[in-house]
Image (cartoon, rainbow, N blue to C red; front, top):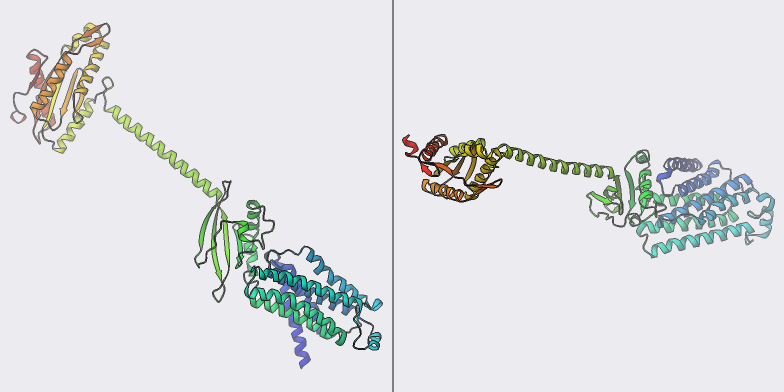
Length: 526
């Protein structure tokens, strides 16, 4: 019964390791320690297989080679896991030669041991030499190799711990991963020398499983759910996962391509400090996600990055996720749209100015620049609607204007019209309105003035014009005008006011011209 349970346990170990290898291979690019994980998994499975088969015989070269290779492969994988746990930026380099070649060499030595007995002593010789016999030369070299590799790995991990680059449970796991496999492998060799390969292989399996359990308990790979690979690899957004030490744990292809383009000095993204990639990036310490707009220096490129804090089951910070999107095209499109809107506003302003200008031109007399009759009538209608009080109005007519046209020509008449218009405009206030009513007739509207005030103003204009010669060619003409003035009270229609002022104008002409006259009677007495 006991043997059956042990066999089941070994079978479960082998199956778990093989499944783990398949999972890691499928997520090879997503795991920072994929090679070490596969090596350790295959080593544990290989060390367990002879135990399951019950085929451990110290003089069987094939079993010896297989078991020794598996045990040393477990050692190499676990040490690599421990060093990489302490320093995510670590790259195997020359360590790969030390850790990778040794399993091959020890396997060859075990397979050919029957010829030279340099790794495993001849049973007869061992029995004659007794328990205190020295180990064979290759076994001694193997133990020396274990010591040197272990010292180097412990020194590397210890320096990381002393420099506070790795802390807490991760530090203990790193030391466990580099110390336990080496001590276990050394003990396995001694156990073999004294008790056979069964205890050696059993120790190798136990060491490997302890390291694996430690890694799983600590959660070295808690940020790396394998199911995400098929999604992240096809995303256009750059997704990066950062651990609590602010080092990049993993990144999808879009993130690696983005960093290669924008930060070419970062040769390898996994394991790099995020500050080496983006020195100005601030990682939030709260549970809220933050969206950061990043402008790439010396370029026209823009990124939109969403930073999210990650916490473990106990609430401790375990890292951050960065989801970056290149929004350069969107920003350029936004700027283009803003430029278009700005140009459109300018065009609308120009159109509005043109509209106002056209409206002004439509209300102006082309010859004199004064308001025309249409504008005058609209203005008077507005005064009626506003029920303006004290509106006075004067109708002005240039004396003998037809004679000027007949004797000096129409250009001379136009010059006279412009000169009279200029005199009227200069002599009126800003609140007054002057318009060309038709032909040589003009109308002045005085808002808020009494009849005497209006008469006084028009009389001043008449005297000013009479003493101001108007040059026409080589001749200076003396021009006068006649005017009729009327004033209406509140509620009186402007049309009647025009009629009364026009009658007063004709009274002035019949009286001899060059004078200002008022209506003989009030508007209400018509």
